[in-house]
Image (cartoon, rainbow, N blue to C red):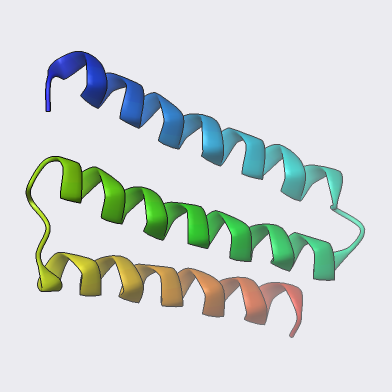
Length: 84
């Protein structure tokens, strides 16, 4: 993967997080909607990570497991903070 494509991939990730942060802020009075945004952000994170590392030819089961565990932790934290 060349440097320009790598920079674009990371900018895309940061842009997705920024959109998610704005969406969480806009839904600040509705915990259910905020949790839905967190679910979408986690799905975006996992999908981006799988595609990115596959494109870099760094994909491995261990790496995918790491992404899934971090996603699970984020979902649980969001659930307990917003729905608890």
